[in-house]
Amino acid sequence: MTSSAIAVSGLRKAFGDKVVLDGIDLEVASGTVFSLLGPNGAGKTTTVNVLTTLMNADGGTVRVAGHDIGTEARAVRAAIGVTGQFAAVDELLTGQENLRLMVDLSPVPASDGKRIVQELLARFDLVESAHKPASTYSGGMRRKLDLAMTLVGNPRIIFLDEPTTGLDPRSRRTMWSIIRELVADGVTIFLTTQYLEEADQLADRIAVLDNGRLVAQGTPDELKRRIPGTHVRLRFTTLAELDAAARVLTGSTRDDEALALRVPGDGGTKSLRGLLDRLDEYSISAEEFSVHTPDLDDVFLALTGHDTEVLSA
Image (cartoon, rainbow, N blue to C red):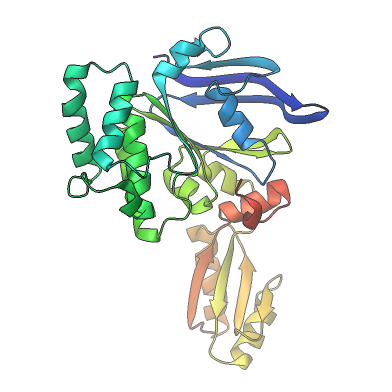
């Protein structure tokens, strides 16, 4: 495989008069997690459908695993796995039977089928429930089974469309661990998610899609640094202390109800030391202080004008 697992240039897609993707350029390095974020209708699902050969592009070039999706679609499909937003398991079959079905439908040699099924059941901690119908599985178990089914053909690039939607926090973190293990094995993950914390935790690079255009790309830290708002929050025990601090620290914003003061800064040790020295100079003591930096929610709002409640779909 080339160093770029996915390379997209000038990707365009329209439905009638509505342009959904308007010249998308992105590159995903092999063995990394790339997360695509965007509000409803931004074009995330369309992007995934094009990259996985489920939909034809109207323009641009796309290479997945080194293959052109237009002229080498079969080779692309052989190299990828896709786990959709909703678990695609057959609830009438057991976990083991679901995996066996995927083996039968894949080019995996029949002689290797039993071994692959047992290895995947063990890897995803599904051995004890292997002979139970999938309809009895919890949401987390179904998602694990769904991903296990995706791995039957040993794909080197996996598209995960909101893989933890609806899962409880424990199941979500289990999925994060599995994703990290896959990447450690050299697998490339293309992730869409409605949880910005998830992208922050997992992604090596993030792209933000809005109205069919990529409005930002970079590492999570790079994107956060683009947004102003780093500040120190000081909390006091009395209103008199808050008043005194507000007079000394000009440019700060006060919250009388919380007895707190928000002081803009870069969060660095030099500026923190200067701030505390200033308070000490006037014999002012804060009960507590903390440094706050912009998170991906702030980035998303600044770049798209939407809050994270409309991130899904």
